[in-house]
Image 1 (cartoon, rainbow, N blue to C red):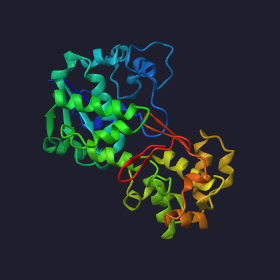
Image 2 (spheres, helix red, strand yellow; image 1 turned 60 degrees about the horizontal axis):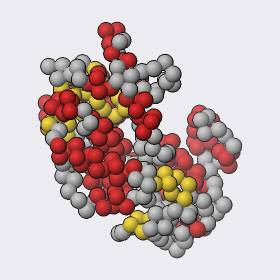
Image 3 (cartoon, rainbow, N blue to C red; image 1 turned 120 degrees about the horizontal axis):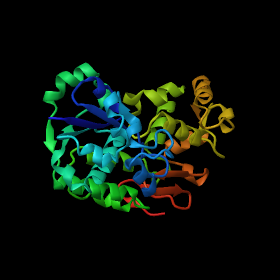
Length: 328
């Protein structure tokens, strides 16, 4: 049986596990910038023309491509997948992985020839927590299920809801049957929690930043990397930095001590920006303390301009989520 594994960047060690002939990784993060356009994704999954930039084709993220695979890398993704008897999807419970899973299932559902070959591994923890020796030894204990019409339909509904120009469809989705994809509901709840609060105008991660600073955590390493303390898992380090800058560098900051030079350093100059983060010593401003106490609304004093799925959040279009979803 020829097996193909599709996974997120967290599953890079699967390539060393020898559980499949080839492992294809997906590095999309659907939690910050505008979602890729249908035209971009069509080219991404299509045959590889010479005009694509590195990283803009699915085959750019295959791990350890053998020489015999040279010609196959130019194939459209669906054609490449047809060569395999089993296609296993390895995606963890994190919002990032679950978004990639529903996006990929929505795409694969359009190719009937593949539907009988697709299997889903039910992972209870993130793949980052497992090294390749553990993956190889524990694979037989990780439940694998056939992907049926229920999984494809649930994924399609969820992906279309997330791509919608408002979060209303995702809110409605939480009140529907999502049992076909067991990890999807918790991931959606985490994503919804990152919408601005009705009381503070901040999402869950921003509020956790303020809470940690109020308890004496004063450096960015703690805010960015102590996941067990932050307890939010939607954003990566780049996005966490942008959220912190929004809290610290606006007209009325909630956080003091972040290097002001970040205003002028190019966003792509990650090394220099990282140095500024490391030497910053952070604290709450009086305004930040008031926001943390639910006495001030951050968004009434500072600009908001970011994306949540297909929803563009701005001060004029600030969808809020608490017990219910509140329209702008």
